[in-house]
Every structure is written in C-alpha cells, then in structure tokens.
Length: 96
Image (cartoon, rainbow, N blue to C red; front, side, top):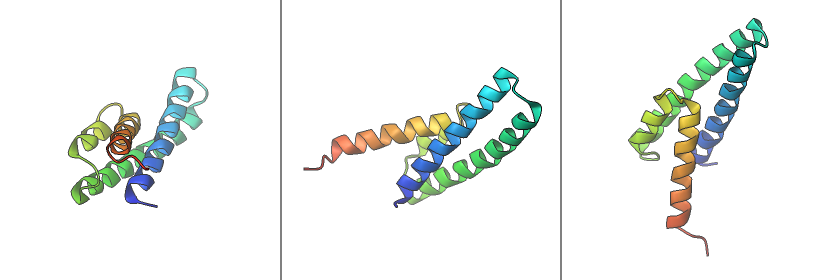
C-alpha cells in the first residue's frame, strides 16, 4: 500500500468518526459517547495532521492539503482534498 493510499484510507476513517461525533452531539445521544468519540477524534485528527505534514515534506501531497486538514472542516477537508488530488492524478495518467 502506498503512503498516499494509507493516508487516504485513514482520512476516510477519521471522517466517519467525525461524522459519528457530530451525530451524537447534535442528537444529544449521550454525554459518555460524545466524550469518547471526542477524544478519539481529537487524537485521530492530530495524527492525521502529522501524517499529511509528513506527506507534504516527502512531496506526496501539496502543502494546501495540510491547510485543508487543519481547517475547521478537519478530516472532511482532508478527504475532499485527497479525493480531488486522486481524480486529478487519474485524469493526468489514464491507464490504457
């Protein structure tokens, strides 16, 4: 698995976790669940930011992706940016 693919997968998982946290928070589905999801998301988002920063330093990702990752959109911004990069790459290098 490439570094790009690993961070892409991790970003998608973190986006799902962030979405679950929002549902629990907005729906008032439990303070304990909100606390647990909040901590997991906080640590996960920090690790995602570090992974994207490492990818930027290695030249895997452009620096604006790090800005999207640390933005208020968090992992959703990262996932959107990574998918945009992947689509641009697929169009630039078609297989066949």
